[in-house]
Amino acid sequence: MDDSDGELTLAASELIPEGLDASLVLLRHGESEFIVERRFQGQAETPLSAIGRRQAERAADRLAHPHASPALPVPAGAPRSIVHSPLRRTAETAAAVAGAMADELAFGRRVSVLGDEGFLEIGQGEWEGLHHAEIETRWGDVLATWRRRPLDAWAPGGESLPAVQERLRPAISNLLRELAAAGIPGTLDRPQVAGYRDPTPDTPWSLVVGHDGIFKVLLLTLFGLPLEQFWMWSFDLCGISVVEFRAGRPVVRAINLTEHLAPLLDEAAQQATEERQRSGAL
Image (tube, rainbow, N blue to C red; front, side):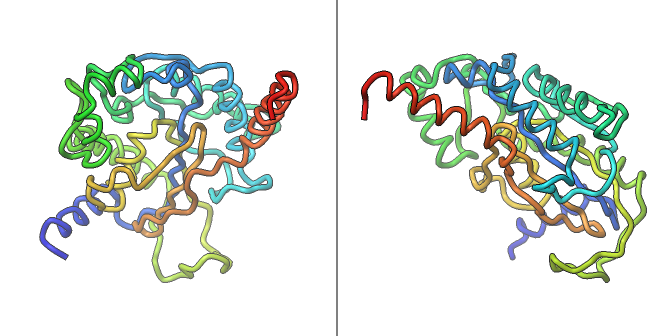
């Protein structure tokens, strides 16, 4: 390990309170109108589409009943908070989750919902609102480099990955400190392999409703990985991921779960079949 790797690992550990026992759940927003239109989003405002609202409802129902099959690996009880990017598509998704959790058949109470600009999507500058085809025509070389070497190029007038990480770190730190204050420190002197019964008490958890790009940077930051690995993670619309902290050690418990969206995918497949039958296409 070279010095730079050591610095990254240290930087990650400084964000995580010593002994933290907690869970952080990540939920990407639902489909937006810009996604339907194949436009770059970034920090541009665009509402959820009709499908996006249904995706948010499905995710909300699963998060409001996290231990119903298929269960999510989260502690018992309601989350301590729902933190979201202030953009409309994430705020709408967070509101759907909060509403479902308040139902008497779920947690039966309102969970604190807070917007935090630290979790805004990566700013895409001059690309925001433009169609993919126009960006590929006007900035083909820049876009190609961004997709291959994301530290060497980014949207004109947009945010570089180091700039994103710099404004994200305080948001992560604040959220983890709040979780630490709500629980008690844990220990690594307990089973660390899945499948063993864990006698430790339930721990606090929080939900972050955000974006694909910001979640990529968030995980790289938590695990002390270089930003060059930006493209190693992928987050589907309304996919759910879970990071558990065991005595301050981050552990990936789940990544990009989408089983709750299966009914919508089945509907789409059925509609496609019916359209082919009507058209006579094979």
